[in-house]
Image 1 (cartoon, rainbow, N blue to C red):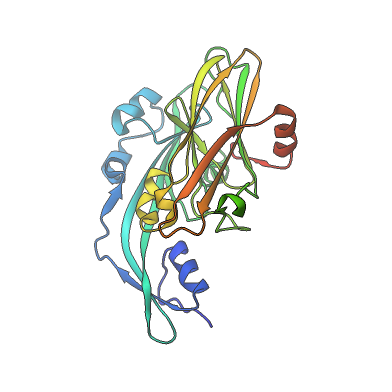
Image 2 (cartoon, one colour; image 1 turned 45 degrees about the horizontal axis):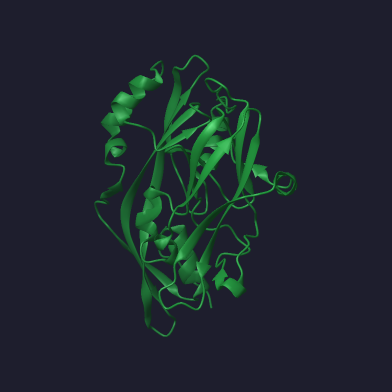
Length: 294
């Protein structure tokens, strides 16, 4: 059975109804409200950020960035609009359900080695894409440097978080990866000491240079700006996983992140995992993965 779209709709909703073999009928909002990122969604606020401003000046205008990529190379501020909903109708005429239809965008501020903003812009973040991947591509299109900005202080210690293509979900533990063998719709965020430093798709790793000492690493399965789209799905119930890390000078710590959904449950949840990995095994795992940034 073929699923015919009558108008551009959210990729996730289109995927769901197409798999179900039905017809997606968009029900648009004529004036899509902002459901996340009110401050940056206003064009006047974004226009107040211009080339030549310092990071501190940008933060004064827009607040602390949701994503701090490359340790200050790029500040990223997402916002989400409620575009309406998509009604799934089976060929028999039965209504299968409705799904959220949203548009997610990010405002990007890129800084040079002198700490001053070089360029700003906004771009859409499609479902099944990571913020860091979208920003990296945008920067390359505008010939902007994507190298990691040097970090202050002792940067000889490193934390590496990675995500394999095949997560260690197990039916024996009643967990599955419902999106296998494809990408999951949301790229989990990686937070170090309360600051989001990137996100991870399957098959990627994120390397973060930091000062020796104690740090807290959090991985959240559904980014805050995607929660509206995820509402009603298993993944909307995903909880963040945390790991207390202590790194010595010159040491590299490895941890693996993955998400699995509960199987055989009447009200299943998607679970986010974050566990330390042996350095030798982790290096072998990471050798076949791509860097999430840069």
